[in-house]
Image (cartoon, rainbow, N blue to C red; front, side, top):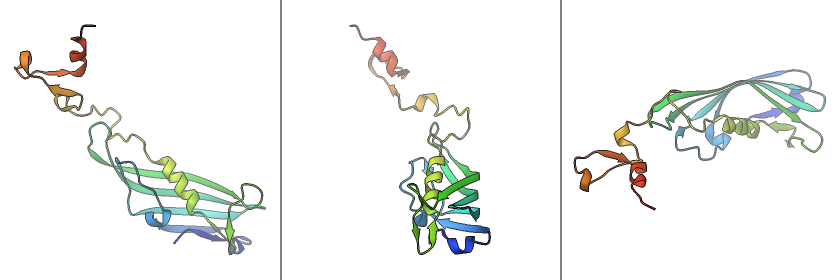
Length: 162
């Protein structure tokens, strides 16, 4: 169920919302191959009515599992938006859609979480990557290198005479 805010309830009080949104409800598209999404997003949001807008502030949290983009090792990656803020104008050109006196926060939460996903997750900032002999750019050569020495592609290109 989407995260709907009833505007009538905001007229005289500030709402505090806590709970979970399933990723199917958030309609997350396919994530990066290296980022594995959990089943739900946890939220704690305070919503208040301004004159002609709704202000939502709070915390959004997901526990991701990522594969390192250098060594492909899996590791946990908490995604925590602690100071999340969403200003939804109710009038004007950028007005949030209002349906049955409700505003849906779900698309705004989805957009901010997608933007916060790691693009090149690393298990450690100084991850060395795969062991040297197993890198994709390395190949075993035969012929005059029958001893089994690994040479990089650059070494082969340096042998070219142009």
